[in-house]
Image (cartoon, rainbow, N blue to C red; front, side, top):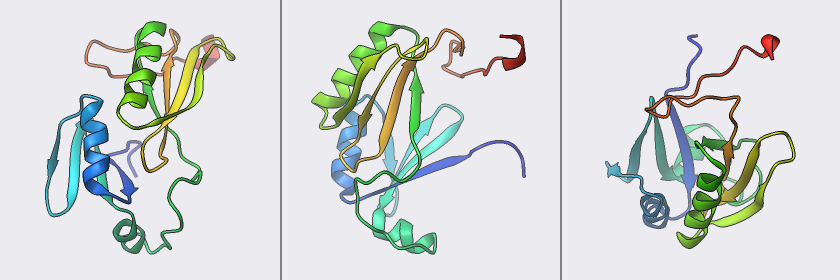
Length: 143
């Protein structure tokens, strides 16, 4: 298996609401057969009905909003961008779950989308972003 992720699919309870939320954050998607696709840098973020996604994965859907063991992250170029994005997510209908702070040497906060999917928003100068937003992990043994 190649070391990469191609798509991240979020199971949502209301596809229209979920699409409106991500579009309010500035994302632009395409709906095909009750599925919304967003180009997110070098991968795709997909919104699909929670029950359909569970069945397709051979799993039980469970309840929306509980912690599923995965957090998506969006790194930005400044502390001000962290604060601005948390505010934008809240205005769009998300919920700030962790106000921005600097507990680990970088500045981050978190929000949940309307279905409870958690997102970390972080400014970490140790993880440089290219002009196109591509993140490059540092060589940790040289830090």
